[in-house]
Image 1 (cartoon, helix red, strand yellow):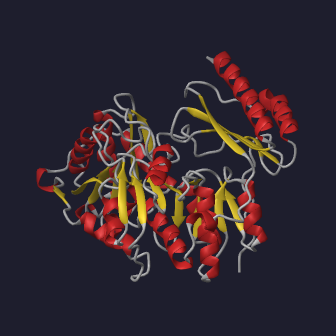
Image 2 (cartoon, one colour):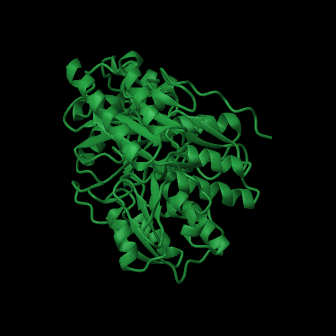
Image 3 (cartoon, helix red, strand yellow):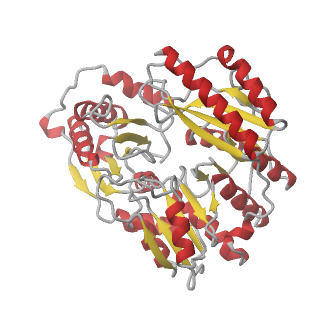
Length: 476
């Protein structure tokens, strides 16, 4: 039985079904940890080698406390700065007495899995996910494979204020590579689908964004018998997410059509997001993937609790799921919030429009490879093409635009935007949703407008962006 839906924190100035400003905790304005770890431009605080070394020491003191002998797992994506920060973290952790297991380029969810599989004290990922190569970041996992709770993040921040103290020479942490990690993670992913699932005769285009999945993902689909057309599998340290991957599906759509493939799969730079492309080259985003997985689980009686989306999830998905008697909850943006809602409500399926999906009964964190496998499993089990699986999903027109917003600029308030929001709502009609919120990973405001027709949607969005640009320039 599904428990009552929790009431989400209402955005400032909001009128249901959700329009206004969302300046909630979890943005990059809450300490050094944003919605997805620490992230920034390489060479500028906090992403400097000396600071990351100190971070490694602080994390070693906190996460390795009483369990330093269990070690800390470190994986990274394919940015050239990953070598720099890998060495810095090694030094800091060793100085704190924590041993290190190096994975090299490895998907973020794979680091989560390996951390639990070997009983490590913690896992660390060096990645800026979908950001360009100029950025990098640090993500942490606890021994249970989940993102760190706020209490531990604050404790690490507190330790950063202390002077670095070296443990005794006999207690220094040691470093070694974990050579069988890729095989372990592949077997874990394959175990999420039936052992008789055979994709012989299928052609799948796989876009790895020149990122962390560039070896593992093509190998996995080949193991299942598919003919694989790889894209974005030639990382050079500078081309991660560059016109490829889940943020840029155009190349994948073109490849699917050119090779007459059954479908295409695109990951982001660190492999925790995925979007798919059907045989006609049409993009199937995170909202559509949630719909496919929810309906497939319902048919097999494997869906428990509500499906969890975020404030960015298209209203049409919520309405369509409820027509099928599937409960739906909204959480703030960020996989940690989706996970918290799933655990509170006893759910197993949730995610974001970006393709960051959580199958909680299979993995404790968003996993692009496992999510892709579950969608392909649904297509294989039902003997239906991907395009058929999304039929019946109603969606309202939606557009998201990013507005550059330097961290030193004050955030807009409800009073300053009141008339603009009313004008936009008038243009859109009913239903309409407008959400303006700070990114948790980049110095941006994200403006999401939903409803109306194409013309009114674009007009409302343009007017809001113009007003925000005016407020930003005036606050400098």
